[in-house]
Image 1 (cartoon, rainbow, N blue to C red):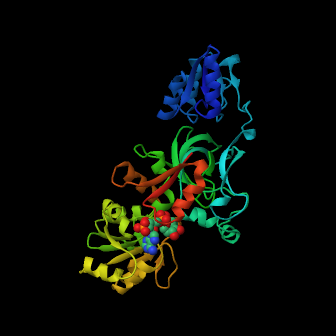
Image 2: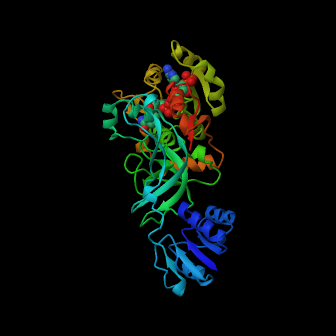
Image 3: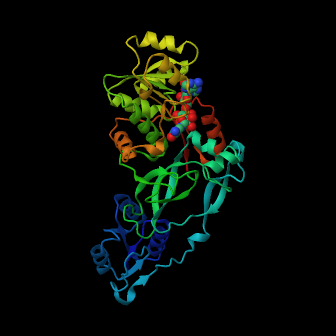
Length: 406
Ligand SMILES: NC(=O)c1ccc[n+]([C@@H]2O[C@H](COP(=O)([O-])OP(=O)(O)OC[C@H]3O[C@@H](n4cnc5c(N)ncnc54)[C@H](OP(=O)(O)O)[C@@H]3O)[C@@H](O)[C@H]2O)c1
């Protein structure tokens, strides 16, 4: 028998397709994306290109089959294949009972409180998508937020808590009313303190802090890289927007080789500015590779900056604390051309990733896809080694980003 299957590319659908093929049936699966089509072909099914939103494509798929298994219900197609139609709007597999792995905290504290646990697979509700996470990028805020109960409360976290915010992966379940994403789409984004997990559910219209967010991962951007973009990319973009560098500028960037620094340096260079980046002596080559002229931080930095830029520094971004900001003031940079992401200082406009301009993250992803911006991955770890990954980043001498492979 030839059976047309909708919802054939998520994990329930894949199991159904496999069972039907093993039972000797010919399967035609509905696929909206190229990725879904490849998955179906690999499983031995034929592909019917179309979408759940397109009733004509459902009708034409059903018309060439003897029967329909409708796993992803948006429209009633039970009339499309007569008495052979099998509407499985209520899946026979109870996914709410299934479990998956996630990093969980039963108390707040250092890396020692991070454990990999079996947790229920989250379900996408209305306006939400579920993502099968393939990579999660770490940021200092992840371990800062969960370091003690008071800090966690300020960020709205409670126990048991998840961990990590930046993620990338593949949509595997779509809730009612979602039209922007389909099963099989590659996505990336942020979900506050719950990204280091096999599955994450995010609100399509949410923000990183409220419900999570998602963006299409462009071709040419691998998942590890996509998992580093949301927090650091938005923060660098927000910092650049405050000082607005251009070709006439010499921009001083403090902590230039770190997670945010790698984006800030390259964005300032793309804007045409000369960039001087602070780092330890061992970071000099990494900073040069990004397009920055290295200067070591610590005692005497202002003198070294005067020697390196006798015509002066015109703007500054402090990504570490206040030293760079103070050095910039000593060098005569006006306060309105200085920003910081890691401190609150009177007279200085702070930059925050949450305030990045609309579209900033898509622009960062586009630059990465175009090969104009690269993200050095300092290290990657399996989920089981989350403690080691956090310890590495918390040492604060990482060049680029730390990623967890899920
Ligand atoms: N406001 C926001 O929206 C926002 C968003 C993201 C991050 N943040 C904050 O911004 C800071 C930077 O984040 P990140 O992800 O870039 O961190 P990161 O990756 O941990 O930064 C590591 C970098 O810091 C440099 N560094 C270490 N000691 C330094 C010093 N004394 N002076 C100058 N640089 C020093 C290191 O350079 P060497 O290896 O050469 O020593 C390394 O390249 C963190 O405090 C983070 O919490 C704020």
